[in-house]
Structure formats: C-alpha cells, structure tokens
Image (cartoon, rainbow, N blue to C red; front, side):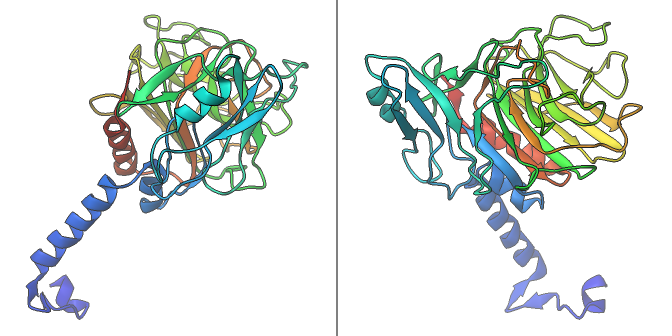
Length: 348
C-alpha cells in the first residue's frame, strides 16, 4: 500500500497507524480549540499580515496593547491592553482613564508585529479634510461576560495605514480578509470598508481595492431587500457577486453580530461569506470569477477601516475585530475562524 511504498510501517512503537492518526487529530482539535483567529489562519498556511481588534487578542500568545484612547479635555493618551495573554480587552483601564470626560480611539494596534497600526485617516480625494476618530465609549458589549468597547464609526470617522511595505498584499497577490461587525448600526453611505485600498488615498481605478464592504448600499441597483449585505469593494463598484447584476444568492445579515469574509486570488477568483457571529455556520454568498475588468487585481496595500479607498466617509458601521491574511484561505480555515468567533461569546 502507499505506506509500504514510502517505507512507512503500519505499526510504530507498538501503536497502530489508526491510533497515531487519531492522536494527531485530537492534538489538532485541541490546538484549534485553544487558538485565536490568527493562529488558525497560520495553521492553514495563510498567516495574518495585520490583525486589529478593540475587544480581544487575535493570537493566543498576544499580550500587547489593543488600542489607544485620548481624552478630549487634556489630550492625554492611554494604551488599552488585555486582562490576560490571548484574552479580552481590559475595559476597566479605559473606564478609569476616561471617567468624567470623553475619549476617542486614536490608534488600533496591529497584533502581528508588522507595524500595521491603524491611525485616524489622512485626507483623500473624496475628503480633503481627513477623518475624525471614533468615540471610545459609544458602545460597550461583552465577550464571555467581560465588558469591552467597540470601534463605533459614524460618518466622517475612519482609520488608515499604508501597509504596502509591511506585509499587506500588493498587485495580484492573493489575500483573505475577515471582520466581525454589526447589522444594527449601518447605512447606505460610501463606504464602511475594512481591507486593502489605495496607498495614496485616491481613486486609482478598477481593481485597485480589495476590501469587505458591509452596509445597505445597492451600488448597481436591482438589490433584493434592504440589507445589510456583505459585498466586495473592488473600487468603482460594490460587488454582490461577479458582475454588475445583483447576485441572487446574496442574503441580508441584520444580526446583532456578524462575521464577514472575503478572499481574492488576485487573478481569477474571489469569494464572499457571511454568518451570525453568535451561532450557526457561514453562508457562501459568492465563489466564482472576478468581475470583468478586475483581472488581474492591482492591489496597493493601503489598509482602510470605515471609509472608501479615496476616503469617502459617509458610512456608519461597527468594528470589533478583523484581519487581513497572506494567501488564499481554505474553506476549512475560514469555517474554523468563524467557529472561534462564535465560541468567543459575543453578547451584552
């Protein structure tokens, strides 16, 4: 058989091959159960190039800061960390620092160590004034009954970092993206995105973006229902599928917590997925060819949150966590990430 052809005995150390295989499976399952999203992506061969969250660590070994807040009164700043390694945000640090005043989120730290920290967005072609920061106390939720704060973005607010030289996909390189957001704080303004965009904050044409959009915008018309939907912002269009026509396999996600995913091989194929971040599995909304005029991709490596690629800043949305990964994640990897999100215990 195949094992004998490769010089492998069916018995090893007194254990049958079946027993060894079962042991390896149990070890893998234990590893996944004690992993966070970026650990899972790495085990699938698609490591995180950037990882952002205001609510929890996205690596099981991460013990750094999640984000920075600034008081509006005296402009003092404070970095907000974790309750434990690989755990949840220490909201008490923020509460104590911001007591009696208002605070804004000025930095969302990259947990990968690549330095892709998100800061308040610089001016762009659609918004020459640039962005303002999100209110640090606009929304609190719980993760396994631990109080944490979201990045609750209103029109005009947003974040950016040029990651072209620090690991973010460029050109036609493959890439995967996920974020956890909310179906209860949305609008139809352009564009509540998280992902890859122009480094110069200008509209540089079709295929220069590769970002997840979440909201109620019906860019090309013909939409069914009112959303919100998981779509792909590939520049000069929000795509529900592989063309300008409405993808009838789309579905709305009005859930309180939503997992949104996309992946793009840069040459031929992209996919969109979504799910309830509190229960159930992922829905594959689209998996097929890139739209006409978008192959090959021309990604630039800018990272945006809450805006369009040219800093269009008319959207509203909520960000809890997200990452951009190198390579084209497998379905099994994405399913495992979503299972981890569900197990994280998003609630109130």
